[in-house]
Length: 230
Image 1 (cartoon, rainbow, N blue to C red):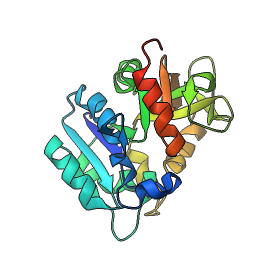
Image 2 (image 1 turned 90 degrees about the vertical axis):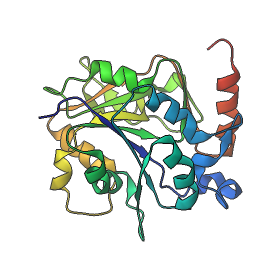
Image 3 (image 1 turned 120 degrees about the horizontal axis):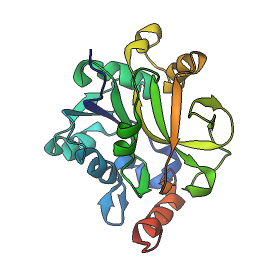
Image 4 (image 1 turned 135 degrees about the vertical axis):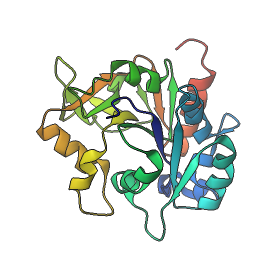
């Protein structure tokens, strides 16, 4: 049985509707931030791990993302005719990802500080965890509204509620995806199963994080990348 993640799943299929006109002719992962496609910042973090496989899902304007990612060693999981959301997208990509737990990463955030994939790799304990999420305390988050997604207890176990924001990077076991019969569903469905068993964990990110979910987030992300003292 494989206990340590060997593969990475990147979520790149969304419509990016909050970006307005910026995503009329290109998918959100290819919007430029400080002169580079947004997804390339996540790819830098992933390539540093030297994983055996990197898979990205696509749906909206998939040809553009495929042309950008395939030369960088990324395998494409195309979702047509229906976008499958995060849980359905991960389930559909399992034949490409292989067995065992996987890293997953959103492609619409900028991290300034330690590599979040490396952090979660160092803390992962498969005997007691079904998923380990990198979370961001509200005070360290840029470009994100709301009050957070999870409340941690003293040993890192999570419950739903205001406190930490899920930053978009995790290690997660995939075997319980088979318990969800739907084709289209959010990863929240899988997290709920883990919450019931008290096996959903989180760790706080010790740096800065910016959500690039709307046009204002681009400017915030660029200021974070250009800051000399963070």
